[in-house]
Length: 150
Image (cartoon, rainbow, N blue to C red; front, side, top):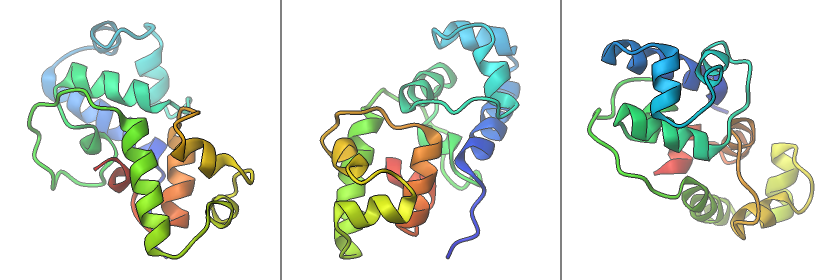
């Protein structure tokens, strides 16, 4: 099993690092991303479990790939980013990774500590994924959270 830093903690650290690199305040970043003024401070203190659409908004505002916001190192290039459906990528990668491991949807959900039909709902794009759910699925599939977004 991989020793992985929780996605929420990596996300908080990386948002702060990229925001600081750009020299913008928390409120300025929140405004640029179309979020409430307290959202970025709450993210940076790990107080909130954000949805992937918020990750997308911040990636666009920071002009970086969303994987950089969830990756443990700066090994990935900090090039510009154009919006893509992160929920769709998670759905595709979830199906591909669990198939590779020979896991049914219900087995994957159980391994991630989710309700029985949750993986079905994600793969059917009926629900929005949060960082905590992304973390649980990544651990069950033995990958890092950011790898679910590529």
